[in-house]
Amino acid sequence: MIIDPKWELFVRVAQIGNFTRAAEHLDCPQSVLSRQIGVLETQCGQRLFRRTGRGVVLTDFGEIVFARIRPLMDEAARLVVDIRAVGNEPMGEVRVGLLPSLTPTLAGPLFQTLRDQCPLVRLHFMDGDSAHLGEWLKQGRLDLSLLLREDSEARPGEPCMAEISLHLIGVPGDPITSQNQVRFADLEGLPLIVPAPPHLLRARLDLLAKKQVVELNVAMEADSVLLQQELAIAGAGYAIVASTTVAARVASGLLSSCPIIEPRLMRQVVLGTTQMRPRTSATREVARILFQLRDRIFCSR
Image (cartoon, rainbow, N blue to C red; front, side, top):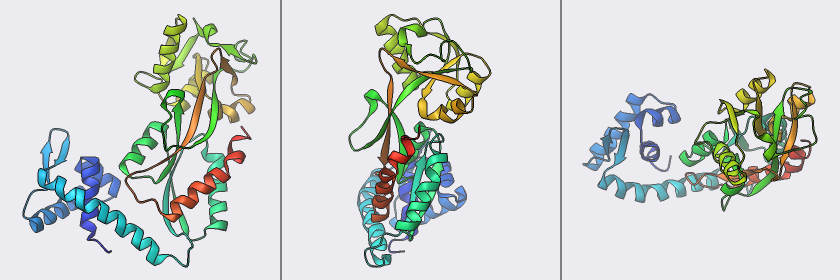
C-alpha cells in the first residue's frame, strides 16, 4: 500500500458517520476498526472524531486531516492502477449496482463482454432497489450503478440509458389492464397498491392527482416493487410499475399490464457514478460496455 491502510478506514468512517455501519461496509469487526482509528489518533496526538447521538462526526482537527488525506488517497489509488496496468490495458475491480429487474438480461452479457474485451477487469455485482443503490454510490460502496429516476429527478452527470413507461398492472384478463392503454383520470376509484410517502413515485402520483382533481384510492401501501407485483397477482389491487419490471411476468401470463397516458408516465434509467472513489480506466470501460449493451437490454423489453 502506498498510503497506510488505516487512513482508508478513517475516510470510510468519516463518510458514513457511524462505526457500526462503517465496519459492515468494510467487512471488519467494529472493535478492530475502533482500535485502528485509536492508533491514528495516538499518532496524531489529537482526536479525529467526536461521538454524537447518531454516530460520529469529525472534530475540527479531523476535518483538516480529511481534506488533506482524501485527495492523496484518490491519487494513490490511481497510481496503483497505473503501476499495475499492462501497457494501456484497464485492470482492477469495478463495483457495479444492478436493478433486480435488469439483472437477468444484463449481468451475464456484461460479464461475458467484459471478459472478452477487458480480461483484467474484475466485476463485483450488487443489486437492490434504486434508493439503496443510490445510497451505496454516495458512500463509495459502488463505482457505477443503474438507477431509476422520475422525470423531474434526472440530474446532470447521469447519462440516460433508457426511458421506460409506467404501467398499470393487474390480474390476467382484467378488463382495465387488458386494454391497450389507460388514462390517468381513469385510475380514480381503483384499489391501488402504491409506495408509502415520501417515496418519489408516490409524491409524483399525489401531485398529478391533485393537478387533475383525481381522487386516488390507496388500498394498500408497499414500497417493494416485487411485493407490489405479488399483491397484484393475488388480486389485492392494481400497482403502477416500470414496464421493465413486469415484462417476464406479463409474458408468462401471471399479470396483465397497460401503459398509463394523459399524461404518459415515463421513468428514466440512468447510469450513476460515485464521487467517493477515483474513476479509473476500468470504470470507464465498464460504463462504455454498459452503453454498448443498452439496445440489447432495453429493446427486448
